[in-house]
Length: 417
Image 1 (tube, rainbow, N blue to C red):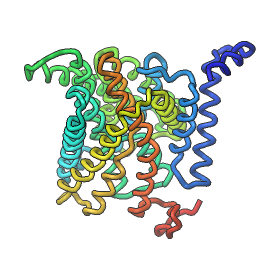
Image 2: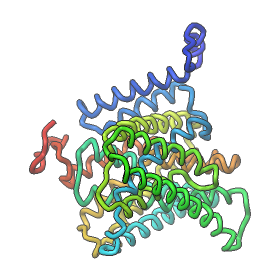
Image 3: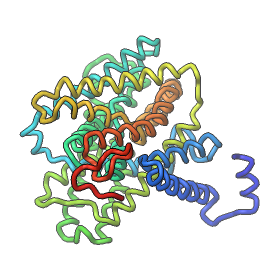
Image 4: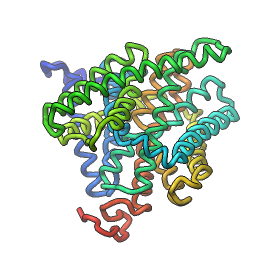
């Protein structure tokens, strides 16, 4: 790949630079692959995106330097922020008053996931600090993958809604804890106050930035047409500005975006949804994040010695999520079968996990490579396998308005594409 790029670069000198041409063509291939995979193999588009990114990464495609920094890091943060802003805007806090067991499910599932992954990795001989970091990343699922699968399958129902809600809450926990833990990677603190203060700082700054974003958008939506192109531009550019500023101030940009969407949902007097134009812009950012994740993960230093750690991480994480949801399921409004399906739907890993891993890698040059060597292969595998499992769950729960790709009958009222 490097030799080919060197030859190509001798006679092609685009005004925007050769990397711009390379990434534009890569995204074009990814878009085509996603369409073909969905149409002819009945798999989610993300499988095609990830496959193209993985092949490019294995071929040595430039732009996948690790840990992420500069424009690559900003685009990943922006893609995650857009997804979490939309996810936060779908949660009504009033619902938790009527069904508090959902919060218990969320907390128990996250706690069991952390404990299971940490204990399994420690049993395999992984250092405590590395096992702790990997376990914190394992808490998250992928709102981007789940959202893409939901969109591709036109899904709606209790399993889909519960998985989306729990995935969003898990992102809230992990973003706060990882941002605080990354700041303590090179410090030997034992005092409880010293350990909790970074959490308070990250959460406080993120709440302040998120509240400011929600206020600006609330004012804008009161004086502007929600379906206007200008409103779409205002939304996406404001989120981009917050993404650029939040981390610099010491907070978390994706966490601030999630909280902004959550707050905006609570103060809005009428239902609001993404304008069509913003949906298209968000789709491009999400596709870019999928490709970037697979490019970066494929270029990681693949060490056969960590295969057991990766498989242990994936297995312990999946079992803990299902078990946590089943234990807290009584009184939550779903059956045991639905709780199990929700747990399986929460197995994907993608851009959010990569962003959290990048924070650890940047915070600790000594521990970062060890953490990355376990998490990056798991992300590459579970971005694809998790998307397939989530699609299977949605069809199993009969919440898709499309026919079952396994050849089963479509649910009542399904639209055949």
